[in-house]
Length: 385
Image (tube, rainbow, N blue to C red):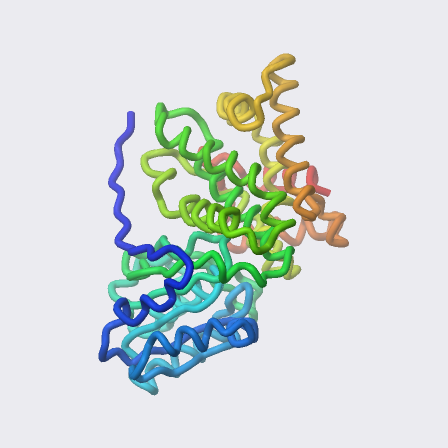
């Protein structure tokens, strides 16, 4: 029986040339801090375009937010916000920059040690600075949700938080901003959006017919556009569909009222924290092995996924499940992403290190049934060797 509440206040402004809309989207008297990652925002001219759109507003900058934003870097941004009495944040970049901005927005208004925001998963966030985003990399969906993931370098700890207080007020999505991205980042974005969808879809049936079909449509869209997205970087229609699909994959709609897994993400986070592997690539390592290991509890949805997404109808049920998992792995590999730990120079020692980190962080009952224990996580990782 469906039973849920859905709320998403983020305004999406989508299309070419929409950065100019910042002139009306950002409050006219705001003291703005632009947050961004590396040099590409400057090199491509996006930062200059943003500054032009902001006109006479007082604007400051904070650069250097990492692909996996670190607590150490973000706390420097928090200090700048407080020192310069900033009252509006604007993230210019991909999901990591937007995630980092969410943390800065919450931490700048937080009484106490800001790391506690992560330790309590955002339950202690009562207010945050307003902020918007200019998306340059389609992947995480952070531009239209209230989640953030932050890594503490000192302890190799990667944690997530959620809070209604950190929905972006608006996000500008201009697909032309993706034209200059390297193929690896586009591949990562496709994989990230695919796994976000799978985490909410491939659990067990609850008669959420619209959500199921919506999720299957997103998966099929990603499969269809992936070759063109990699081969034709300036194909606007392909990049527009990728950008919007990645947003829809994690804006809460397909997950409304349905069971969700997220074990692939929790295990993947530890691989990133320990070994610096790109987030999306850790998901591609974990997901195929997790589907195989959890095939009994996911059986009904695996069969549905096989038929509706991959059009597999021949053979017995186990053969169809095997084929669907194989096609999933092959899809990731077609993006140039290795789906084995060995592809990253890792072996059994990494399995034990990740399991130890999961235990340290209390990740001992993962998955939609809370039945992925440390022993099961170990089996998933061993199957990914």
